[in-house]
Length: 88
Image (cartoon, rainbow, N blue to C red):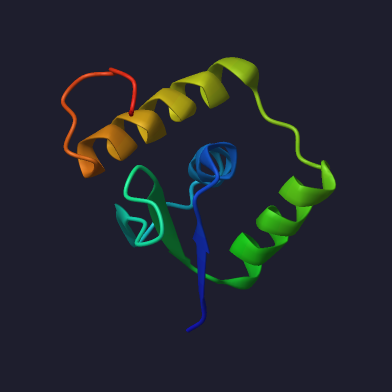
């Protein structure tokens, strides 16, 4: 199965909001201050990604905010940070 990788925080949050969770998250080799999320590229995930980039998705704001917070927590955990301090 093909895979899709992204470092885009909003896209990660949108995918999680629609129920698509990464199969892995790891530090980016090109920039250790970033995290790469890898997804199985199913037809549904691909369509959601395409709609995201075309600006065609609607999300419920409070659910999205909660999902965004959850994704940020996962990123900070992946980077080895236990709090929400800035990444320098």
